[in-house]
Image 1: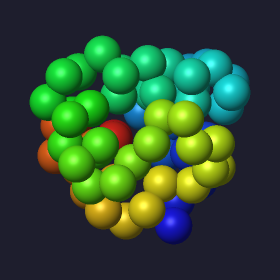
Image 2: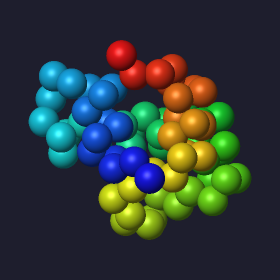
Image 3: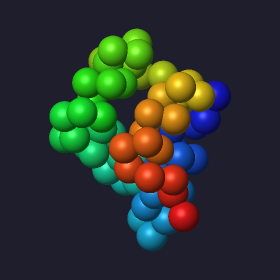
Image 4: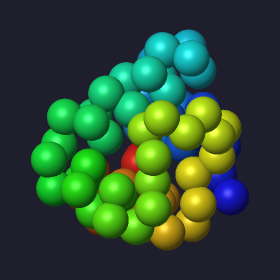
Length: 68
């Protein structure tokens, strides 16, 4: 399991952790194919888990690329 804040900070290293997490979630909602694939694999935007599953991280990286 990967903390959402940790993954978000890899994608947005120049902003604070909470802002980075919000920005990443915004991307997940805005990119239609990414959002659909996450939902098809059990992700819920209503769920307030602080973690992404390994499968969710894989899907995110597939659509956004691996963070630098």
